[in-house]
Image (tube, rainbow, N blue to C red; front, side, top):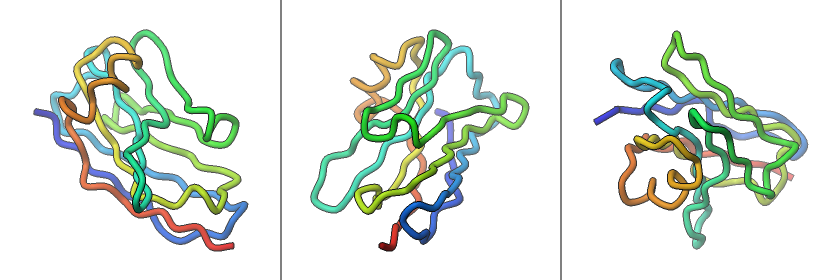
Length: 126
């Protein structure tokens, strides 16, 4: 099972930016996995917000135009660049990976079947 470690969370002012990192254990191959980011705010369900896979990518409407997912295959890492942060963005952000060629399957199944990092807290001050 792939191991994931997130970093980069913290406190930022509304309108500001933050970059989260997710490092995957050795042996992880981007060709075989879909990988992305979920977030969970207090009292709310875990929400899949971004995904990249060998067949494409997915951006939730709530983050489209503000958040960007990218990968560095050489470093086995995925990044989440968050710009124009809003008061509704605070949550624990999780990196998750699933053996899948599509983001649609990833979004349906990652909660039950995926490998997860420990999460990193993002707080936005107004």
